[in-house]
Image (cartoon, rainbow, N blue to C red; front, side, top):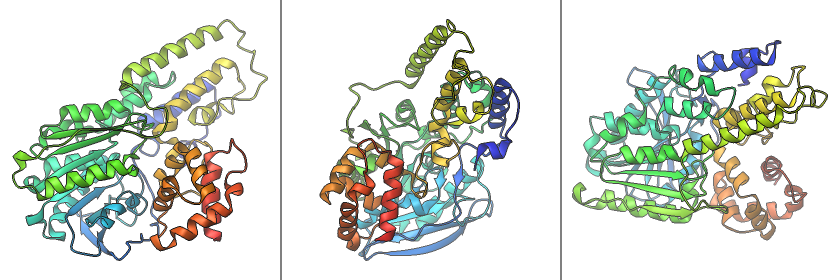
Length: 476
């Protein structure tokens, strides 16, 4: 949804326009920030000998929900209940856990209300009711009373999963809760995002108080104990600040573990073979070890990509440094006439800030700085993933946000692998696109043959790479 279509493209002064748009967002006049569902389901995944069963079930208030039961070829080692993130639907997110099916686990994935072909419209109380209902159903899918359930949630799904486990009457049968790249609180993440811009800073606290917070994971994760908890967080997550993962870990009861991925992005940790191996070992320990009190969760620190951080960063201190830089910039700009840049076009990049100010007559440097600040606040909150910020994205929208982020973060490695026709990065792209195992060799050869079309110049944008990969794959 285009936010400016939803809220109206107002012809007024820049400050009034900014205030109107931001207040509309804060007070719920536009689409909620937390939910960006897609109704159309992607093609069912290739399970390499396994099977997929569709299931419909009622939420706590009777809303009909839709799910997939993904069964491995042989007897399952255990059952994993998967809670997906806030965009699209389970059919695109399920690629993140297909490797668990291939490793022998039954995976139950489902869509919250308003996602895919589940009925209803998403809101915070509703999706959390859906999460509790899905956990209850998981115990009936495959001998759950005896075998127990491992609950795994990514991003928004981690928040919903935490509330579900804490409030389930069957909590004692849950073997573990795994929370990957999740925010600590609904109000907290809104506030932390709005703090990042000059225009939005004054709205950070009042806007956050318009958000329902009773279901926030920071309020419930302490009640999950004695169920073992694993918190996974990347230090360079552009969506959820690292401090949110630290907070969830700190508030969780024992036994618990914190898996820190140096340089890791948003919900990308399980693309790493070492993290997968650690998770499989953890599943074995909780599903097949007798007494829970003997369970333990090993810590984990891994590197992902280049430019890894040597120390953990704290979100608020980082924002304070950014604000100081912006204030210094504004002070320097005040030395120049306000009309100095008015004859120039906007040179602020992409984002909500550019959309707000692009039609104004005043194109001064000061206005452009404010636009850039607003871009920085919103671009990683919801603009890029939902296509509302007019940022350069793949035009053929890939129904998997992790595909876009992975290519963006691993462009050089992907170029190397495609030129060679093989490699771990290329294999990950094939997996994220749902390419069947039997077709991987042809997929790799096709991309290799079209290398110069995919990477026409050294400075090619990732959006072009994603678009071209999809295009040549469809042609092949």
